[in-house]
Image 1 (cartoon, one colour):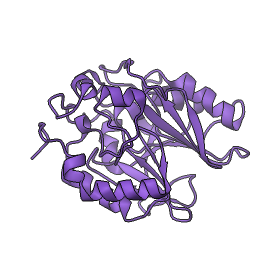
Image 2: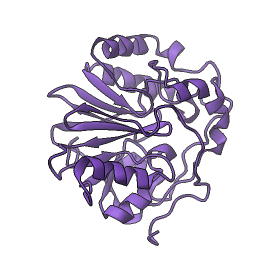
Image 3: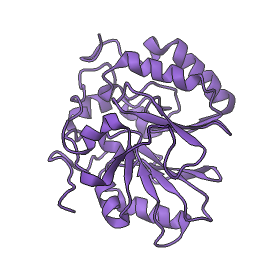
Image 4: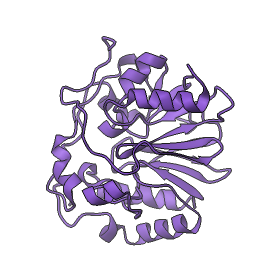
Length: 281
């Protein structure tokens, strides 16, 4: 591990899984989703070119899986132009240091996430008391200390463009994390939502394991600003996405997505916001 990069001292493999683990699906000719245990990563780019990026970096100890997935899709020894992060929670940066060392590529995130990615600041502690199921109760086991990417991390351009993702723009969607972003392509209304909303009830171990599809707000145990989270969902629903890839759960498209997002916006307080928990005002 390069001297200027390190994970927090609480970094470790988390033995959580789902029936979706290891499964990948091409959602569009240039968008591929792959599930690592309980979280999704995306590969954006035409498989016939060497211009592609990785969106988010999986769970701890998943670097080899991500590298082989990338080589399967883009050819042996292929590497992305960059790794783009929706945010810096452990299940989205789990393999990032090994990947940066292997590929020697830059990482981009929103300016408000930089302190959590340069060893300066820890996220608020996961809330095990929040209304929810077994995953919420297990959440204190999750790595929470900041990782340090040193000078390998860069800020997303302030003009809203996304490096190496032409046609996409980043949208600030805080609530789940201060610098959480989603990515949207106006041309075909493709949304990479991150954890702004998800399509599985992420606090329930049973639903996570079975990947039962259900629109939900951001994972409860790590979300600490529910008003901002609601505003972010409203912002994304207003874009009328045609297809959405989320950080957890199966992709949604068409009428199912439209109807579910409308429902989430209208009933966010009952669907998403827990009845109790330490981040409930």
